[in-house]
Length: 448
Image (cartoon, rainbow, N blue to C red; front, top):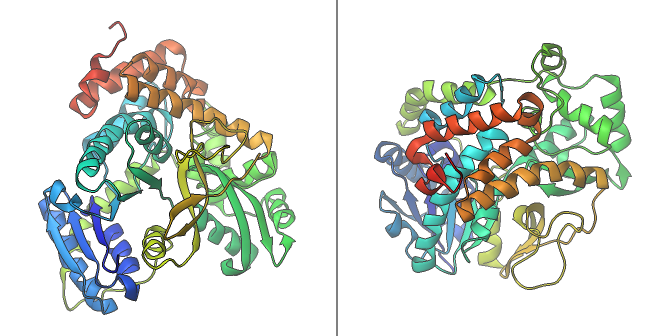
């Protein structure tokens, strides 16, 4: 596989595609790759195609780049499929995920992983990913599907239940948080040795050391002192209570648990600096700056900086092409489908998606068996796994009742709303999503 065929699905995400292209083409062994850019938005696809050419020239690569709105053409014979789509976009889907719950007094920060926002995102996303996987089964059955799409755990789990396509979910929370903690401690991140495990957006550093010395006492001192970055108060508070540091950001984590966003408790929101409606703000800023960014990216005279990112995608491709072994963090099923005995994390359910270190070489993704994790961490993860399990069950069986069950068991939703409110909220969300949710789930098996 000297010149791998790489399909980038959702390539209209220009900045993310630019970063991944720079990572991939920066490897001499991948500089001649056959890159297929696919998106349903021709305008954004055109911009990414131009950016791809500029990235290639910047790193001295000579890839074959094809831009197409024909998904089958992009997937045909692909060795690797990188997925970065957002089904429904900011408008109408994400706006709906935020505005409808607000009518019931339910406030969110990011709403792309758990909670009613995460549930709805899964309902509209997994069917599209599955449709793509059916194409992969026909056109590139031996491909490795690199999924960057949220809600990560529900997407990985939903696909594992319904397609044989090999999929690994990739996130940057592990490496980003390690860097943030290194800054808090004043230690270069490359000198820190860590082991992390759990579920996506709720994995914890089981080991965090510098030259063999445990760094947790220093992190705990910071937490107890209160002298922590304002934007990270939630995670340091959870460190105080659990004894371990979680990978995903405070704005995400604050809506995975019932402790920080409570109606009538504005003091909590202020004390822990919880950024309500954070994701819509980011989206509006990106939309507002798109025209200026597009002009800059398309200007051949404007400098285009290409730096290697912390994303794992290019490392996986390079290791599988060259055989160079690496360890990355990937989201896979807790009980591997290869028939090998035992779970990756012993005290989490057989059938759930977990985030663990994985060895990568020519043999592909080889997850690490962690064993048991601290019981308080497993218990907290289980509250999120409950929601994931019921959402996936709704998707696989078409039983609409499980959507209500998922929302009913969501920690934040249950802390804010009573059962009648939860049922009515799900009804409203399904109605307003319309065709974005499969017809079978809109009609479902529940009595309307």
